[in-house]
Amino acid sequence: MRPTTKELLKKLEEKYAAIDQDLDTHLEGLLYSEPITYWDYIKTDALLSLQIQRTELPDEMIFIMYHQVNELLFKMILWEIEQIANCEEITASLFTEKLMRVSRYFDMLTSSFTIMREGMDREQYLKFRMTLTPASGFQSAQYRLIEFASTDLINLIDARFRDTIDRDTPFEHAFNHLYWQAAGKDYSTGKKSYLLSSFEERYKQEFIDFTEKYNTTNLFAKFKLLPKEVKEDPKLKKAMRHYDYTVNITWVMAHYNAAKYYISGNNPDKELEATGGSDWVKYMHPKYQRRIFFPELWSEEELKNWGTDL
Ligand code: HEM
Image (tube, rainbow, N blue to C red; front, side, top):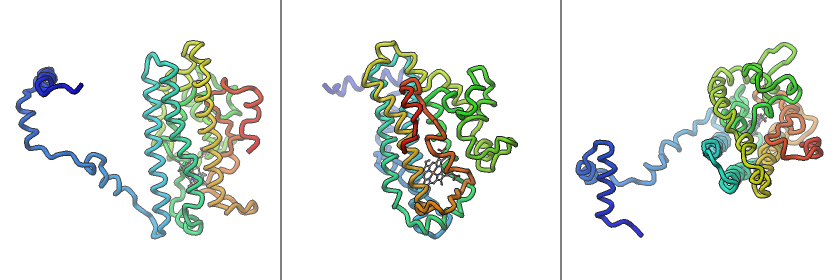
């Protein structure tokens, strides 16, 4: 039942008294304040003023907006994961519920690539992408935050160097062996591409602070802390596996196929060069990256065949 006006006034009085405020002044202020509108609340004007092209090619606008939509959804994903991280006594149902929300966002991003695959004119893309050099979606910081918030750092280390790293390894060393370093680093000389070094210059400290927070509260760490019977909950296990597969196989392949289509027009003989200058064809495929958030939830056979049948 809705509270009466009298009850509401009493509650308001208590609320404002608690912060040494006079209720009457606030009530009088209501007489003069403007009613809220949709556009003020959603900040529509500000939001719609953020799409600035670098060329006159109309489909560049699609490219910008598509990435912005992705960034907004990444923010929603991080928001949900943070709630799991902050929850001290999480139940199987809440964990599952939040995880499925996150998965649905990622499913949406994955299926959006089927729209985007032919969502822009390829000829235009090949022109405007040159003006974006050397930037790349590789430099999406939120994408990296989602990875850090999803699993223990060790599972994001390049598979070739995993044996040399454990929980006591200095962060700097671990960071330099994250799987995505392979996109911009020459391991024989240690030299990093501009794509990678500029990204690190801008975000490295943020990443360090973030990984500290998520060291013990990332999704996998939280899952492992659950009581045995909760961890065995079939719905939760299924949700965990679904999330892992969606982010690390389905999304990656959908993105890879879109990239391949735009850059080479699916012509296998064509040189596939990326704006960020990475050896991306090799590095982006799940069978090379072997990025698996929750390895203990997959069988040996499944791990062995990760991404190999795609
Ligand atoms: C039609 C749209 C897209 C095309 C054609 C495309 C193309 C590419 C290409 C060619 C690369 C290779 C890296 C490089 O440039 O050196 C790449 C990398 C990357 N892109 Fe995209 N991309 C698209 C959309 C997106 C979106 C929406 C995101 C979301 C932020 C994204 C995130 C990434 C990431 C994270 C990488 C690094 C790969 C990895 O670490 O797995 N891309 N993309």
